[in-house]
Length: 185
Image (tube, rainbow, N blue to C red; front, side, top):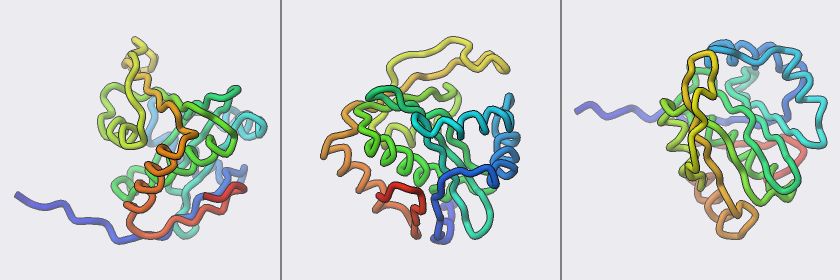
C-alpha cells in the first residue's frame, strides 16, 4: 500500500478579503462551485462589515482560498469556504476555519452553523474536528445539482473547552499561519 506524501510545510497568510483579491476569489469560486457567487454578491457582502467577515489565504502572492462569516445576534453562519483545488491537502481550509472561528468568538458568538453537501465527506470530517455535529438535512438545497445539504452546528464555541480545541487544531498545522486580519488569534 502506497503512503500519501505529506506536503511541505507552508507559510500561509490570512488576510481580510479586499476588493483587490476578488478576481482570484472568483477564479477559485468558478472552479469549485456549479453555481458560483458573482462579483456583485461578494462586493455586497464585503460592504456589510458590521455583520460579515471575509478572509483570504495567501501563499506568497497567490490567493489559495477564502472563507466568510455572517453574524446574527450571538450566532454565526459560515457563509462560504473554498480552497483552490491545486492547494487541497495543505490545511488551507483548516487555517481558514480557524480564522472564521476566532473572528466569531471575538464577535461574541456562542454557536456556529453551516451547510455542506452531503457528498462532501472530506469537508464534513474537517467540520467535525472543529466540534460541528449534523442536526438535519435540507433537501435539494443546492438547486443546480438538486443535492441535499447537511446542516451542522457547533455550540458553546465561546467556552474555554472550545478555545482549547482550536488551540490543538492550530498546533497540528504543518508550517506557519500568519493572521494579518484586524483581529489577532
